[in-house]
Image: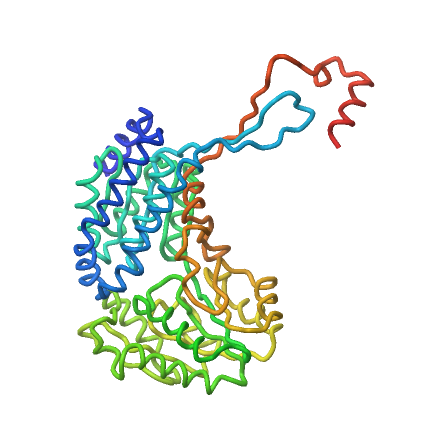
Length: 457
């Protein structure tokens, strides 16, 4: 506890020195971070392979490459984001200039998860650096190889009083949350997110919560079914389903269910072979605890394909379940594994009721060629973000924010949204002295009241 308290104290002192404020300082820090990612590419791949059995290709596509893209986007736009934003000034405040300026919060805590242990730590870190903050970066103990590598690389790249990596489990989280931070950014489970928010309330610390939930994928009868199956299986099997925005369950139009389930099965085998758990590029569950949890969810369900596990490697076959009900255990929690339960619908109007069984999802995907279906989903269904005729790719851009709504989280990041998340925007009115309208001052008279009515209506 004392060590953590001292780290926060050192960072606060460094921040208050003003060292992190200049654009030049931030640019240099981002360049150092980018070099640390690029220069250790193979080391990152090796660590991710040990932690999650990710292939080098998947590690680059979903972690290393996305991190580099975020940093590059920030470097390109940072100067523009830090400029004052001029806004209109009410006539009643004549003559004045109104503007907002972004200032860093100060010392921020970023708590990252295990499922994308590199990208989900370094992307918000880049955003916090861009905004001018000092950072304590807390890593998950479920990905020990990546965490150890990150601690080593960050320590070689930045001084402790600027950016510090903390490893450890629940006790370290509790110790950190006893400290006074100026902002907390958390990615992880809903239950821990609630705990973080509760602790943050002690100091009225603002938070961003990137959580999860049961993200649906909807397929209607007009969709390109073969392509839909391909894109759904791609999204579901990334990181063996251990993705917060993975399609959690399928809602397919009842007239095409049988045909579509066969297409899903075909796509699994085309991508991973007849025995997917023998594919060297197929990731595993992060731990035995998570392996057993997912296997329990499959138990006693109607299996269309898959259903087997390999406990010695913690791999679970891509699995599709049919005839699930609202009482099925798999519909009671976020799956976070390579299992896709299937439900059906008849009309668009049923969808709000189906989704209403859960909190608002972090993501939603719809496959359709009908404009009416597209418009209905966008107008009447609430979710963090998503895709039309694809899965996952909405988070792979720095030009849009990424975040949840309601039970799936609050706040967003990526690109400018990330910069704004880690910044407080001050609103300023600069009043000039060469004229001073008298109407706001005592004594209040009839003609002043008439002027007030003229200017303020």
